[in-house]
Image (tube, rainbow, N blue to C red; front, side):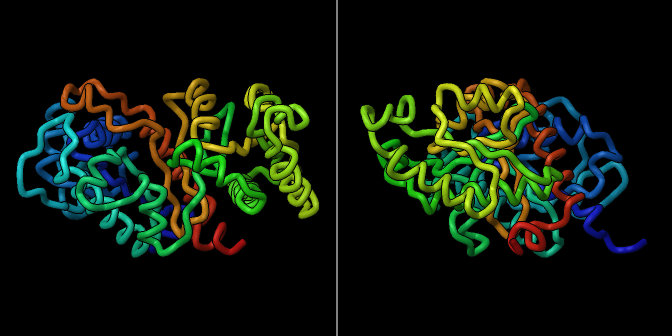
Length: 334
């Protein structure tokens, strides 16, 4: 059999915080994919935790350390003690970190796509791993500057100038350089997945884009010059557009992507429209990474009730990227 090429790159799934719903949704998603659908997938996590998750989820699942008919290939990251469901635990945070670090090693070695189940940021930091979440951690592990977060869905997609920082810090990070970089990253990604000439809208920061300085001058002083710079570079960019209308206009098909100025500005409308199917995509890394757009759901962890639909969407998007070639060959070369 020939070696896998760009059309059949593998998928590596990090199972997330073991005290949350990550291992459960991984088991349920793999079961839903069926034997053929989970071919080429490797899961990174504790065998003990994954077997517990399979029992809790009520799905038959066999884990092996190599590809085997009907089984799931598992890169075992053992955990020394039993972990309770639904609790912030430094041991769980450290396990989540080790899962991701091991997954990145496999992804880079096998030229695979990374799909991540949710982690708990408080547990991660309690374990001594001081990152704002997956995006900052993956930038650290791959030796790259902080990546951009894109939320992708059928009706509305957003890329964020900043993500997991306070609102005050997010406002400070609204600079022409960051806005133009977000536009460029978004355009390259959309072109990669087949949109030849992406239409980009840039959201304003202040109500009504500041109303000519009445409610703040950042839109006129910072955002408008960034949009003009991007236009001069040849991009189809509109803005700044009032944030109370731009997301609706994009959801109706007027734009392919909205540049949101901060985390909640982009997350709220995207999740409102497509909570179960929105995929979190990291741009600017030397690897491909997709993820669910929800958290560890400690309140229902261990009950078997967590939905795996969002993880299926993340896996499907990862395979879509796989058909377009590796990030190291495409987006990093731009």
